[in-house]
Amino acid sequence: MIEIGEIAPDFTLTDQNGSLHKLTDYKGRKIVLYFYPEDDTPGCTKEACSFRDNFKAFREKGIEVLGVSIDDESSHTKFRDKYKLPFNLLADTDKEVVEKYGVWVEKNMYGKKKWGIARKTFLIDEDGRISHIFNKVNTDIHADEVLNKLSG
Image (cartoon, rainbow, N blue to C red; front, side, top):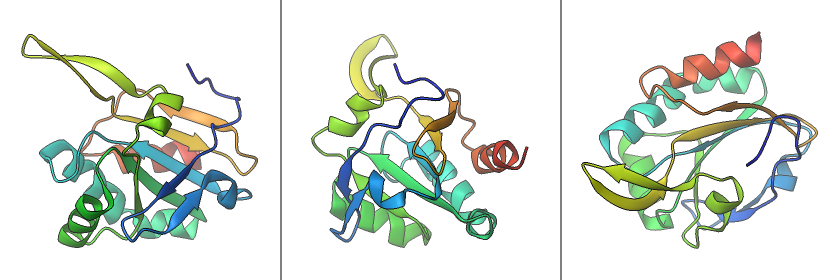
């Protein structure tokens, strides 16, 4: 399990356009790294649109927002375009990063067990350390919660 104060696990992932993103490329900036289960589903759409609607406030504070799921680049492109998301969505199709961050978990849905992403957000400071972890996410207001934490 990752804990507050630890160095965030490094990664290299592609975004919706096929461009590479390495965590180390963001050194010196604060990052909101949010993990979500699946593109274009109700909860994930609410969460993404919450970040979209507050994106200007994140930018004004110099904060990068990155979403991560196991969906591929094509799925991310459709999701991003459909909802006019102004931030990058990273494709972890090999599940390497979701496992590093401990969000690839066994879920019990309606009595059936299956593996999937636990919705979780990590705040990473300018030095690449985990400064906060949101283990419980309210998809309707999550971006507000994150901004409040970053401001306080």
